Image (cartoon, rainbow, N blue to C red; front, side, top):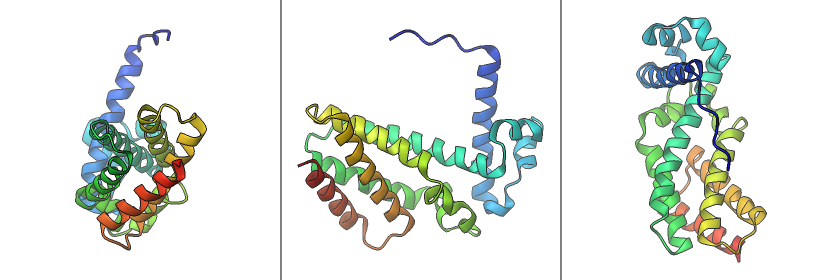
Length: 195
């Protein structure tokens, strides 16, 4: 694989501004909810112009979407590391789903996104506009499945991972059963799908 070209100073600076903006936005969102989040406050908090944030995120909704995707990537990296220690596919998936549901229940940012005042404005990030979230979860889970079951073709691993990701997200958005029941249902579905 060829090495990627070195990042320019402008690329590194942009990445730092993006990271700082996402951190500040998360703090403001937890403190004041969706309606209390203003791009001007984020810009002031990190020492850039509001236009800089509009150039990076296009809108307040774009900032929220980037925040959800970043939190998802961080969570998936931790989850993937934990799963690599489990040999049994069913048990690995039970643990993955339970960890997901427990993380959501205890993460203040995700609680604001799902249940806070004005959460309805943010809910599309986990429903009708959830493609980036589902894609990230599917790709990580498919890679895990292929490491665990090398005989699986990429299309089957991807399909199974997407089904599991969509089911898990649906239970995050509308929890009807205790996490251990949901984890068993999704793990059973995944294992049967792969059989």
